[in-house]
Image 1 (cartoon, rainbow, N blue to C red):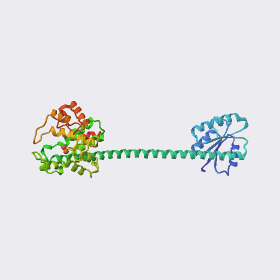
Image 2: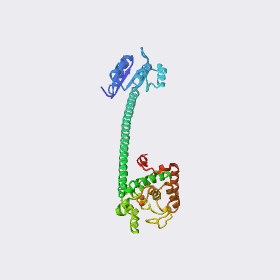
Image 3: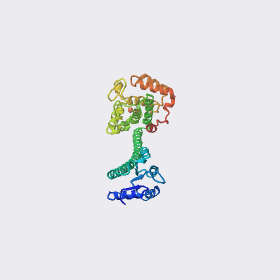
Length: 375
Ligand SMILES: [Fe+2]
Ligand SMILES: [Fe+2]
């Protein structure tokens, strides 16, 4: 069967015969039917691109036949071949959008052939458009599919990265804690000192409404503030008696040693200056060390650590004295506020004491930095 097929429907066999003869050399197959029933039979068996129907037929009018055909075979191009007397109904059919072209009987051969060629071209174009639409729909589906896969993959990778990041941070915090514990372990009296200073300092930082990254920095600086004591002889650190001037001079080196230990570690490089300056005095006096910075020149974490360090030291047992009551600590902080200590930091600590009383220095309660970082 030829690729293109035209079906003529007419109740007059002579007309069909004439049409077949006329179109025998055209590049399409010609089928004929003498009634609507026979025409539908052809439709069931063949793929028909163009149908040309007579208007006046005994059982069903051409317009009705084409109208029904439109519902079942919407892609077939419909044409009408009609005499002048049936022009009204033919025009009405055209206006209802059911017919591609109208050819009048008796036909002009060239006009008929040209109309058929146009109809077939039109049909081919419609099929091409349909095919392209289908292709673009399929490509769209494929694209949507790829997008969905990509999104899922990105989500999965992001989640994995988040988990790895959390694990890394956890390892980082544990390493810093271990380092702090190693320092504190040099002296039985200072066990847990660094962790407690870190906790007190972070609470003060939170009371000062510092942003999260700064609170974290305060916490880690607190943990590591005395890391330089690793470089000081144990005999000096654990000496139960009063230190000689030389020994005191030696111990005063611990902030610098600590900063030097931390500086080469990229993750800790911001903490190094906070450690270096945790014994500076707020008024810049010579009692502060190592650089005698003053006021805002001293990093805020260092100023906070100095208060936390003092509070922790005074409220812990020492070989040469027992725990001091909080009232003594308060008096000391008030006395040196603006001199040794940043008044803003002292105020924040006082307001915490007002809220929490003795609970502030409760030894077992910890600042939950892990939960804080995960939040
Ligand atoms: Fe210190
Ligand atoms: Fe300390």
